[in-house]
Length: 178
Image (cartoon, rainbow, N blue to C red; front, side, top):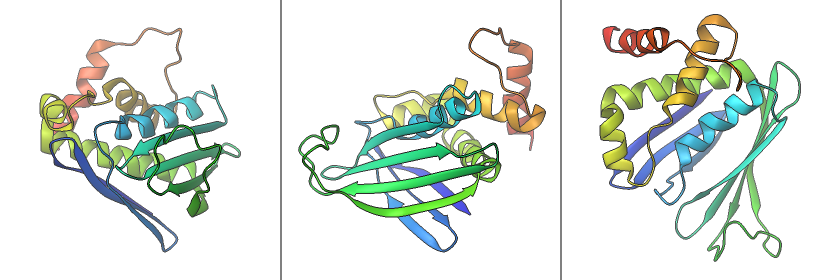
């Protein structure tokens, strides 16, 4: 399994997802908070707020709909549907999309791969650099920290819990010390 996400220029990203020899290349624009959507959806699925998460990336002119379904504690279903030349990507009622990927994988493996890519985004661009390059959206720092913490402790901070700034800074410090 591979997940790659790079900021390719002001307001544009390039990347791909590959699972079991199924590969999809993408290039979302800053109009949507693409990387943030992925991280927030994984956090929501981890906290069992939802078993299904759907979001749409604007790739100008097409729309890319991602659907994550947590089937059990171990399995994540990923479906990626393309809507060509979408006037309104959020109104898909009259549109026919093409599912390019519809596959299951281990949930923890996908989280690890996405977090690995988040690490690289931070190392390469920094928090402020990410914001400067991406445009309208900040690096999804809180979701990133929740996922990093989960990978280390196998627990996730829920909505009603306080966090520890020292531990959060330790996670970020460890990233630059590697």
